[in-house]
Each structure stands twice: as structure tokens, then as C-alpha cells.
Image (cartoon, rainbow, N blue to C red; front, side, top):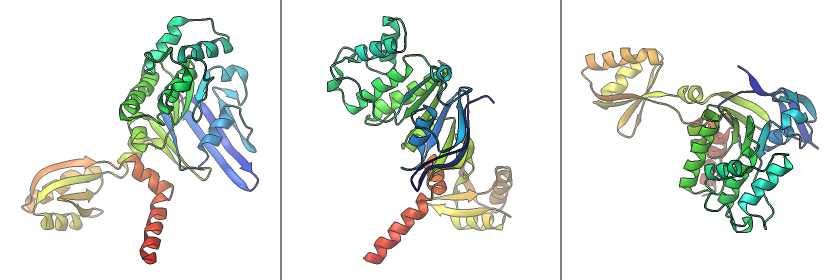
Length: 313
């Protein structure tokens, strides 16, 4: 698997604060890669180092096969970090033409119009940027990151300020960049459901460290359970409890069985032999949010707050 980004023991300190703490990470070429973490986890610091905007305190990194700051490698990248800002007196079209010229590209009306269309700004192409909403600025920022047709693009919160239809459109665009254009997309977002839908792999950071990394399908399937619609429920729980390594719980009107996939047929046979009517059995995976909350300690933090509130009352 070819990597577009490699970091080794990457560290960045600000006084006594470690924004990144010995981060070692390998991001493969192709697809959509999510970088997740709570505020202060080090995501923006990582992106700024990769783009050559700040220097690490220790460690090293390579981007597109070149060291940080390598001009040739940098020309193969695009980025949008935080809310983009553009000259307010320019139109969206003028912004992209201006950026094209700044990158030494020849004036290409078709290319500019094409990216405006793909980010959903065709109708606003000749409106001045000063009247744009936050969501429209995000769209223009994505187009600006892509105007050079890079091989790698870093997008930090690209759906910030967008309504649900806009978020859906951005999700489709990001997938098309990977699948149609062959661009490697690195995405940071707090909208974990969208990340689960659009990303192939994710890295979860917490306090500057890598706490979990892998394919989204693997991370979510690790906590999967068998959801059973059965009658009677009490007998079902007894059968599950009798199986080695299996655990059952009641959620609403369904029984959730935690057991390895290969053991599912044996469980279903045991239920039928015990006279249990099985109306439905299907696997239910854990969502990325639960994985994120567990890995970053957010669940324990939330429980502590709830307990403190309860004591205060």
C-alpha cells in the first residue's frame, strides 16, 4: 500500500503544551481518509505541519514522497484549513481565476466553470464574495483547493455552516473526488455520521496521540451484535447465557446478542430447539460515534458530568 503521508514521532510543543505527542501515522494513497479527534486533539496542528505552515518540534514527516516544505510535492497538494477568506470585492469566478494565475496556470474558463459547478456555485459564480454565507464560502474554499487539480487534498470541516442538503452534496462530491478523479482526500470533521458514510479509513487522535486507526468497516464491525426479534424473550436470554462467550441484553423489544459471527448458527439452532420463535435475526454494527467516544474517553467524561449534576441536586 503506497502512502501519501508518513509521520514518525511527530511532536509539536507550545511552551508546556504538547499539541502533537510523538505521532506516527501512515495515510495510504487513494480513497477518503478521516482524521478525527476532540477539540485540541492536534488535527489542525498536524495539517499545518504537513502544509509547511509551521515546523515540528521533533520528529519528521513526508508528503507525496517529499519532505515537508518540498516545493514539487507541495504543488501536488490542495488544502482548505478552517473557514476560508477571500477578497470580498471579487466574485467566485474571479477568485478561482486569480488563484489559477497565482499558481501559474493559464486562464481556463472551462476548468473554473467546471469546479464551480461541482461545488454547487454555478448560480452564484458572478456574485461578490462579500455576500456569501458561511456554507457558500466553504464551497468556494473546496473549489479553491481543487483548482490546480491536485493528487492530494486536505479538507478541514468542509461542511461547516451547510444545511442538510448541502452536506449531502458535499459528501457526494468528496466521494466522487476519490472515485472519479483519483484524488486522495484527507478529511477532518466533527460530524461523525458523515465521516462514517464518506471515509474509507480513519485515524482518531486524542491529546496529540494516535489512539485508533483502521478501516471504518473494521472499527464499526468490532462492536457488532446480533439483533433478535423473538418470543419469548426470557427463554432467549437463558439460551444465550448458556453459550460460552455469549452475552445477551434487552434493548426495547429486541434481544441483542454479543458473540462471534461463526457462533451465530449455533445460537439460532439452540433457540429453535428451545422452542423460541425467531422472527428476525440481523447483525447490527457499532457506529463510529461510539468508537470515537470510547477511544477519546468522552464516555467517561460525560458520565462524570452526569454524576456531578446528580450530586449537586
